[in-house]
Each structure stands twice: as structure tokens, then as C-alpha cells.
Image (cartoon, rainbow, N blue to C red; front, side, top):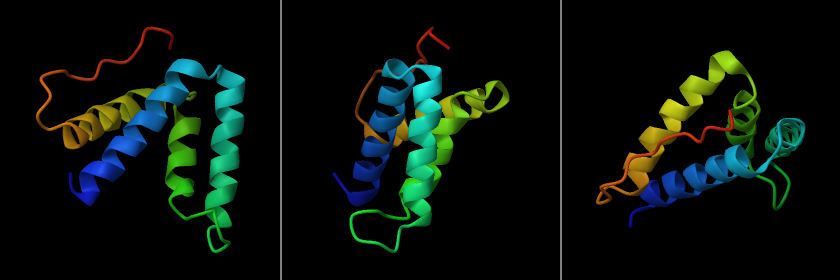
Length: 94
């Protein structure tokens, strides 16, 4: 597995977990925390990678953006698991 596939897998798994397991208010709070961590990415442990991921987690709660995030998650799934016959389908709790 190359680095691009690994990044796509981690991103997909985190977004899917946030979508499936976090309630709306908590998901928005986690997204804000990730975004703030991304802004402080110059500090140790935190990273600039947290900024777009935090914005994506927040976008899961915004109805017009939700479809785009799910399309992005489907693309991440295809990149992370190129040999899989499964396709990503969003859960019904949206």
C-alpha cells in the first residue's frame, strides 16, 4: 500500500466513523477542534492535516455540503481499497 492509499484509508475511516457514531452537535464540536488543531499545526503533535479534515467533519452537518462530502468519501474509498468489490454507501442516519 502506497502513501496515497494509506492517507485515503485513514481519512475515509475517520469521516465514516464520525458520520456513523457521533451525534450532530458532538460532530460539529469535534470538527471545530480539528480545525483549531489545524490552525495550530506548527506545534508538535498537531498538524496542518487536521484543518481540511475538521472542515469535512463540520460539512457532514450542513445539508448542502453533505452530498459533496459523501461523494468525496466514495472517491477516498475507491483510492484506499482499489481491489475491493464493495462500494461506499452512506448510512441512513443523515
